Image (cartoon, rainbow, N blue to C red; front, top):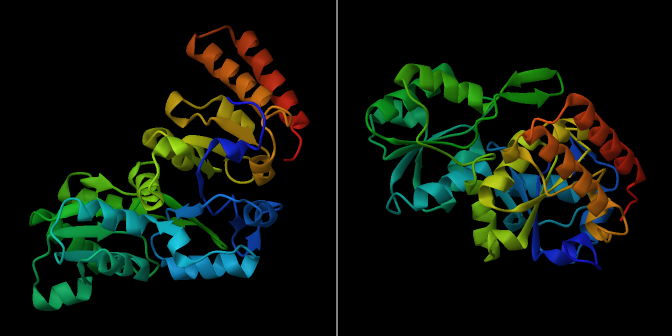
Length: 317
């Protein structure tokens, strides 16, 4: 780890998750807007949400005070279309399952999106299925996906998030809907585009024209944001403003271990050494090494306690 300068001085761009990092529903996460608007690096906001088009996501961010244009947003629907563009000819017909963001991404990717109702009526042949979440997805839509897959169509899922938090509670997510189709066809999707699979991060690096090693991924979830970054060979920053806390990080398997851990996005602006970020990262790594070596429980717990103390001493950037 280099000495001197802000954490972001080690990178050429940032790929940032949204829910739990920038906002929680309609409300901005504390310090997030100021930290992001004062960055002098390109930022792409990467989300597993496949239902909303980038224009809607960018508008949400602007309402919170974050300067953002649609081309700075990357969705799992776009990643799905990007994956398909490497496997199918331009102009291919693709069955679009999910919200408006799925069909929009396919159209912008050079494909002809076919809606489930249209396929039912016209008995159209499709080259692939791009399945994403949509609040209005029906059993009949899922049946069309199953029929197309059984007919030989390439099957790409935008993401496999099993659940979806809503203001009323936890609802089935796209992974649950994909599971229904999987039960019918007897196999998993051919490809997954969203985190923790690497295509969404790879799309971001491609859009930035950068090697993944020059990009810092920022997220709040170990099982999607961080695992996806590890798979894409990106360094990562876990911020503790969303789903996972330090204890979860300390217990994470190798494929879910971040490069850095910080209380919030202000860490992007601080010198990792003077803010305590490097010391914390080293303490977290020591816990992981002890766990991997099957060290005695009291040894692991002692190292974990030290990491928790160091977290409390991390200063804002």
